[in-house]
Length: 208
Image (cartoon, rainbow, N blue to C red; front, side, top):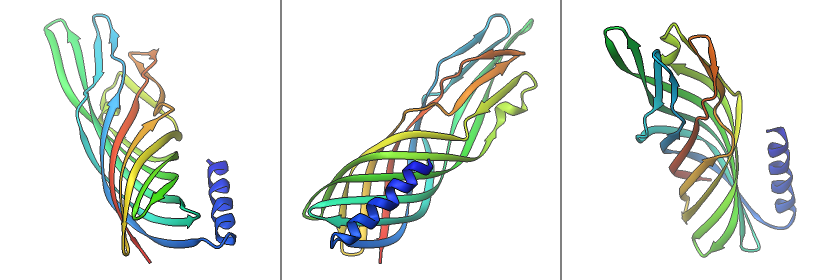
């Protein structure tokens, strides 16, 4: 994460020295998140699965846009929220009791896009680092389930943008290269729970 920040700062300083245009601004928008996870089954006790539905979240923060020789560099620092739902089935002697549990994550995203300009249109790709600030999971309310989330994850973004006067409009796809957590413990048994998120991100920046 520190290496990503240092490389971004170095690139901005280099581009500034090369006679480029540097603009700063504010950014906000929505995230449409999808979560992939394997099903966990503890025979005759529990079954846990992530629901593959769309979850809407929001983001806001600051951005910079550096343009030089037809190339653009766009680092951002964003506070983001996203959530998902998990179905937990308790297998009892009287049958199966199924409940939907919600999970909400608050994180700090640091994407850095680099790409090519074609007039006001941009196409870019780059890495994104994420620092997990807090998690609010109803799974923790279950007496037999404990989760272990990673403090940081890494992924990538690819997308297109449109610059109109002081507006920077972006539509991006984000994939995760590392999982959100290192595992889950169900009824005292450690289990792999490879949860990864994918996002479609729409954002609008106001440049100064």
